[in-house]
Image (tube, rainbow, N blue to C red; front, top):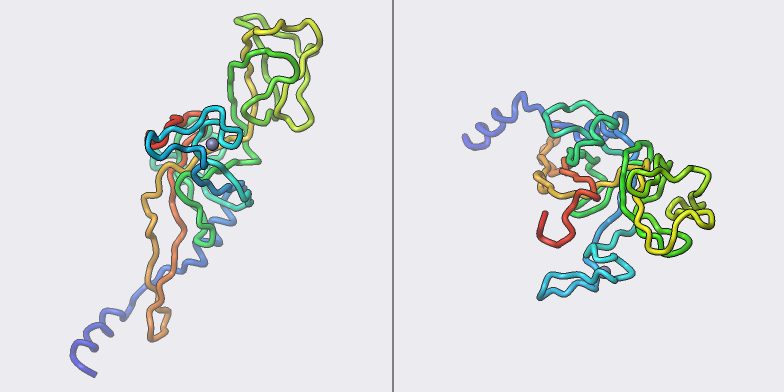
Length: 233
Ligand SMILES: [Zn+2]
């Protein structure tokens, strides 16, 4: 054995390796349920102008299409340095950290929905006959108003799939604008991956080190607070 080998052997003495499995297990145990959808560019995008088509039936002008929904577990924490899992408290904050298991390759622009959490969402809609389509699936309708006048809850109902509002006759006239306040499952988009290349060498007494991937920490932002154009985030 050369002197150099001896030197490195000494450097490995007392080495403490991270156990990736334990991180993954902790994320599973402490994490929240999350529906992870992969994202990709929509083919309606004009690569020269960077514009997508607002009338696109696939992405509705959002540039990205989402597919392949999978349920995963992920730990959510606020950007304020608090690493506690605070599923409800973070909802009003537009941006949060998300830590996913090393086995779930969640990536830039992917969409994450939290099925066990609720948040508020408000939208302005135009009445052009039945039914009126909402952007998000309503778990509950808190209020429907024309300016400050509340439409009685008996005058409308939510469709079975949760995406449409249906009004009783003569509640609204064609062209009326109204606003809604909903309770929805919060929907986030991955806007940054500060540790995209995160991993470590482990040895655990074996002669050869092995490279393993570690859980990823991502920055997510509420989809309804995202700018629409590509490159704005
Ligand atoms: Zn499109």
